[in-house]
Image (tube, rainbow, N blue to C red; front, side, top):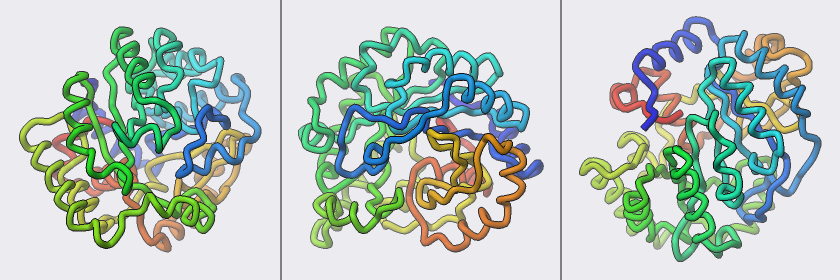
Length: 329
């Protein structure tokens, strides 16, 4: 696994804690999606995407600002025809590159991703997958195999819901059989700005009160599997929070990650999609001018259990377990 070295972790802490700057640029490279998942709001509001030249300029400034990780995600980055050029530009700047994809186009484009360091593919179930994503799972697995043949290690990411929580151990076994890593995070039905509508549409995906004992046993089983060597990258600390449904950590996401929407807007986070400015105004300028507002958002937040937010916040606070096993941004 292309894990982060202790030196990289120290560099991240220097950038975040000493310089007070973000270490990760999380960029919604595409505003479009080729799926229509009911639990996702992003595809419902397609809009303007930055041109390749605008993205290159943003990456140049981000690198000068000390950002060392470029993460291309939502809505579906593989829909960008210039994805290869974007990743190459980031890599040329010395950035670690990562991408999150639904995998539908991965078989077709896997060999274009030579400048990608970390590849995450959403695999939210086995029997439940077609109902959740609207397509057959086998096509996604074929894409994963194509990526592996092209030299990539693959992280399967599963969003836990009522539809799939009984399949989590089977997903771990699938990941093991395919030589993949796997991560888990619980569904959050109130994020992305239209919580009431989404909660109504997706109420069937929320864990019901009567299912909590079985759900908790399932998460306990994941912890056991991790301890026995299964390729689960979540920390035990994080999985414990997921099982208890308690975000028992101090959030630092607004100090760690620079969130940029497809149109170049700089936002607070996935929970607070408040626009703080635009990359056209300058990353450093927006970052400094929004410092107080970002701090207020973190203090006002009721908490979430997004995997990257929790684990990176725990790293920021020098959680020993996370620091020892810091493997995937």
